[in-house]
Image 1 (tube, rainbow, N blue to C red):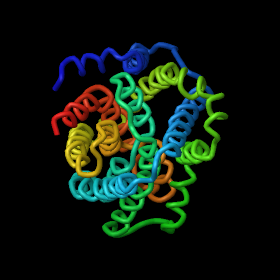
Image 2 (tube, rainbow, N blue to C red):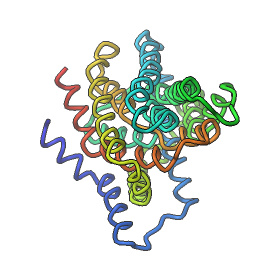
Image 3 (cartoon, rainbow, N blue to C red):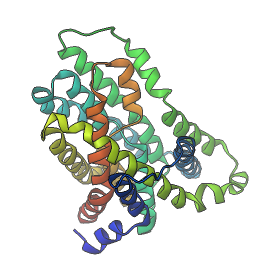
Length: 320
C-alpha cells in the first residue's frame, strides 16, 4: 500500500476529530454535541451529498454504464447478506446472524460521506449516479436478511409483512433525505443552484469534522455492548469489510473504468448500516440484539473503513 496515502488519511483533520471523540469519551470528558445539533449536521451532510449528486447526474447522459452500476449495486446488496448469514448462523444464532447480514449488506451513508471527503482530498471525482446507487442499496439487504431469518427460524413472534418492512426502509429519515435531495438536485435549475453552492460545498468539510467528532464519542460508548459475544463478531467486523471492499475493488473494473466510481462501489460494499437497518429491524425482527449489530457496525467496521479501508481500496483500484 502507498505509505504516503495512508499517512495522508491518518492525518486528515476529519479523522483526527473522530479520534478526539473516542479520547474524550475514554477520559470521561463532559464534551457533548447537543442531540438537535448532531441531527441537523447529519441531515445537512445527506442533503449536500444528495443535492450535488443530483446536479451532476442531470448534467450527464443516462448511459448504459449508469444502468449497469445500479444493477451492480443491487447485486452487491443482495449477495453480501447471503454469505454473511451462513458464516455467522452457527455461532450467533439465526436471528442475530440475519440482523448482522442485513447490516453488512446495507450501506452507511456516513461512511459514504466520509469517502466523498477522502476522494476530494485526493483530487479524485466520482459520478453523481453513485448517490442513487447508495440509496437503492439500503433495501435489498434488509429484505434478504429478514427472509433468511423467516426461512430458518422455527418460531417467530408477530410476523410483519414484507411490504411494511420495505416501506419502513424507504421512509427512514436518512433515505428520504438523500433520495429527496437527489431528486431536487435533478429538478433544480443550474443557475438557481449556484446560489446555495457555498452552503452545499464550502462548509461541507467543517460540518463533516464535527459530525465525526460525535461519531467518535458514540463509537466509544457503544462498543462495549458487543463484548458479550466473544471474538467472532470482532473478527467478522474487520474481515467482512476488508473482503467485501477488496473484492468489489477488483470486480468493479468490469462495470466502470472511473477510479472514483470504483472506489465508491468498494466503500459501499465494505460499509455497514447503523441507521436505516436498526430502524427497520426493530420493526421486523424485535428479537435481534441491537447491542450486537449496532456496535459492530459503528465501533469496528466504521473506524476500520475510514482509517485503513479507504486507502487500501484506492490502492487496489490503482493496481487493477
